Length: 445
Image (cartoon, rainbow, N blue to C red; front, side, top):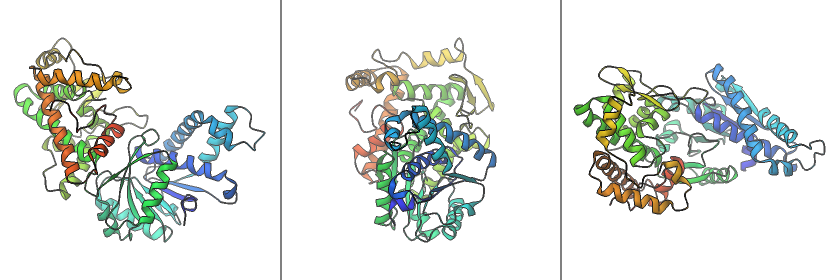
């Protein structure tokens, strides 16, 4: 069974979530494109979008239309070629509308898992809990085509565990999209011990069609991206916990978030990133990694935050929910774990004191966004980190420790074979997390 045939009947389970909704859009686009090819004119294409939440599924339909319209507007030249035999479609708007209608018509929303019956390719994007995934895979195996392939978007669970315990006979592979899948080019591909060459080939071929950048990762809990992120986040949490004993939680969290963004030249601070992912999701991934790896990875601060229902995450419209920080056109407050309430930023009070504690940024500092496409990026990075390396203020000291820990984590992932090379390790952080430099680097050595 070739890839085109598998793409006639696809299902996305967990379709209304952040990751599942993006996968639905990507597959609808590719299936619509195939449906116009002469060799497929007699084929029926069906994309089941399954989720337990009926309200979220209604939101998914709106999201699909919006994203398909954006995709059509960005690819009018390709669409004109696709519709070359349609003299009735003249204006770009008409062509885009036809494409959106065709692609959206592929999507069949349902709250009933039985809707996936007969599927030949299934994307699983449900909650990161092993018992839940195993239960769902067990049911899917009974419903789908006997030779169905399963692409799991798990961000941490070993593929071999899912394959062996759900008895999928090697027809499963890790296909870890990054958020949002419609924009992010990176996909981590993880083969389990039993994953067949045929499944891997289909995963590779599909990645090429979707114009994704595929990075192989070893089947070790957390893989490359979260293998670094969870440990990196734990370093930030531990440093904040240490400082909190001196100055309280709001100042400590604010300071570490600033250091990890401004001094490390990242798109957002570590606690903003944890909020973006979701504090509870961070904990799910931690717990899985802690279960499978011979190192302590659960962090007491995260456990406390989850117990206090400080969860972060995003609303359906993409806005950020309160987490370690609160947001309204920027960060507005920091959570105090002792008082169990948020402390608003105060530019003339405690926030000013925290900034004064950190000290001035290096003279060569340029914001992450200014560096991202700068033609002299390497020179600017070196100049910035030369000053970080010799800086005496706490900001530079904390940054040096953070850089060293990040490099140690990266080297550990390469040395253990999770990432095949330093280039792969850095590539995941550059592509998936939009960093301007990788963990293994020449800065502050």
